[in-house]
Length: 397
View 1 (tube, rainbow, N blue to C red):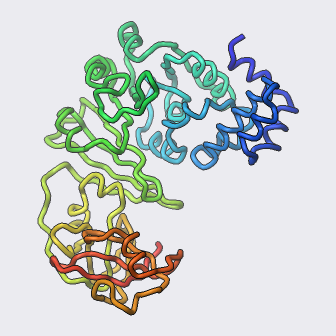
View 2: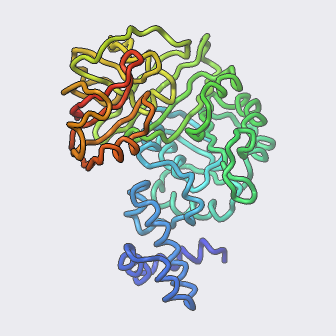
View 3: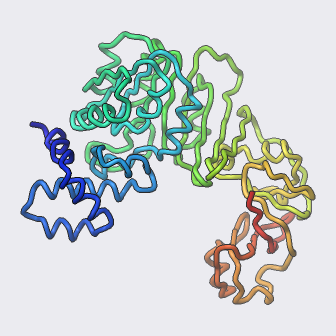
């Protein structure tokens, strides 16, 4: 019996689920030491370790004790649940989905809800077993074919068409070391792109947010769209959407920042920088979110909302109007001060440094500040090339 099925039989037992629940907050190291001679307990402790790792990342998986979780190292590349749900709705549906690198199956689980049938392609047999069990709990009515092959093998032997193929290449090499170059991802997108587009209406590729968008645009001139997905202003993913049916002179850059109760979205065709007027700080200052900054669309967003810029090299913008829908942080200007003004010393302030010689931590140390949540902000920046501190209140939507 393979390990996954032994683990399923173990987890199905009431006392096993009780053991997991009772020790879910405990130290894994201490539990492994205590049960060093009990192989079944050690398997359950591995599940506890995995659950602790995904508590915030995959809350519905964390709460469902009927599911079997992959080892922690297999969970690292899993998408945040909020991102996976949102992206699946955005991509829409059709008749057939093919996930070419399904892994632990989080992306697949939310994508397949929008399709009539699907193929789950994964070279790791343990992950195939695990996903087969989990998806039978989560989506018992769905027609899913599990294929234990690499993406390259599947594309060589399977000729069926698809409405959407999804690819999340591995970012680790055979020694499990993280790789940074797209050429080193597995499968290699440069090698599989052509056979994929011959049989799929669309292809979405999930990539690291560390990659250069400018380089991706050079590498893939046939791109339809690039998505930049963030959660609470933290950039999580770059997505490449290939749709051969769309003819366009320039790919569309689409940015999304998932907040607690809303999604801040902005999009614009890829183009050269546009000109924004420079002005002194007015009543409000705006800082675009991380997705817009990653996509280099800050000036385009400023133009849309009729904002002026504080400095040529700045990502800070200003206006006398308050714009609740602006996709980023919004501040009310209280005062303008010289850098390191004595009135700020030992005060309770939060610090943002943009286009300024010192970082926020250095400014805090020099002024001996006591940063605390909810306190006013010092925005250290340059106004028309002159260093300045802006004292501001952060306006929450």
